[in-house]
Image (cartoon, rainbow, N blue to C red; front, side, top):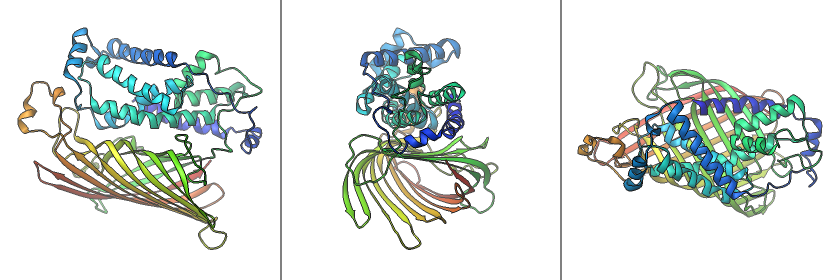
Length: 494
């Protein structure tokens, strides 16, 4: 719940801080000389290692003595058992394994990032922090899936929160405006906030080297949509569930600019939808694509193209609708995925379409999770595995009229380590070392989005998503499920 509260505060305080941009800041966004940009933080690898240890220790002691969680009552014997048992596939709930662990990995990652390490240098801290917790921080046997999602997902979430917090920070500000910026950056990136407090940077005023984000090199587009959605039950036009939603969309940097890129996440976009319903998950879906490396392959007649390697984080979650069937409309996640991709873009001086962008990605899913129709052990009702995904996005701008997006995604996750019914009778199911029902699951998602501009920054937004799940089981009957949802609301561009 605290992580969800952090997310809500992130929305509100980020909007407040960004909305307070002064005329001088807007001028800075056109050109950022060296005297404006903050100097690189010195590297302190051993300080970062000690901070990761302190983070794990404080969380463990809080769980042990304050909330008195059973898993935190560790002893030398439980540590020895963990070392002897080795790694298993655990049975935590979907949001814990597929979102909360990546979020925690972002804390480890940003401990290093806030102590001067770059993207690749910070990755081992996410891995090391996760290993430390799995082996020494809890009684439950260490989980191989947690290591993967905490590390890979933590790298994606960590670099994004690092860069977004840099957008907000401005060391020349004073008073309440400065407080808002520091507070917003702290909520988004707690580890950086703690580091700034420890160094005194949170209140130090500077006349030079005061900005942390170069808006000229890395333009930022941020929008928020709010409205109402209808979630169908088994694809029926009636009998579904209606509830309000909020959607945030952030684009950082240029998706394609004709340049070679070797700095991870100098371009990324994030799309997250929050469901404001007591019945549905608070985080309905979260989608991240971040560039790790790219090279230009087309620059002709106003058309640009790049080939690159991109990291992906996709998370879909829903619950059965109220007073409906027991079918979960959709649930799948790929917290650890990366692969090649192509992005093309162009502008038209004449015609109805003023600009366009086309993306195509093929990803290896190192670890993913998908809804199971049969496996239900402890807190887990989903299968884990590896596989691949294919994603395309078509974006069209229609001058001052509006825009159109078409997202098409296909996920296929293979569950390799299955179980026999007799294995479900073991005394301690925490040691049931399986990925779930042996087989594979595919999810096909099509999402068209229409926007009609109403005035300068506001538009009417209509969208829909069609979901088709096809799961093939080795020991059970195959299952197929189809459904859809629609959304209507207003979008504001900041």
